[in-house]
Image (cartoon, rainbow, N blue to C red; front, side, top):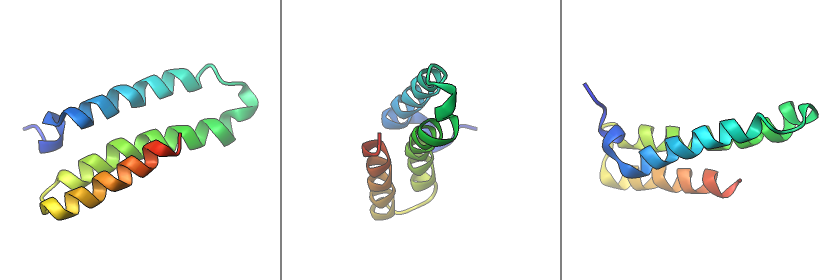
Length: 77
C-alpha cells in the first residue's frame, strides 16, 4: 500500500534532492562532518519528512502549514 505523499511530485523531487545532498556531502572535508555536513543533511531530510507528515490524514490547511515548514527547511541550504 502506497502512502499518499509518495504520489506527490514535490515529495519525489525532494527525495531526489535529498539523495543528491547525501552524495554531495560525501565530498566535504572530514572536519565538516559534524558541523556543515550534519546541518545540510538534516535540512534536506526535514523537507522530505515534513511533506510526508503533512499529507497523512491532515486537513488541507494543516498540509499547507507542513509545506511551509518544508520550504523553510529548503531555504536553510
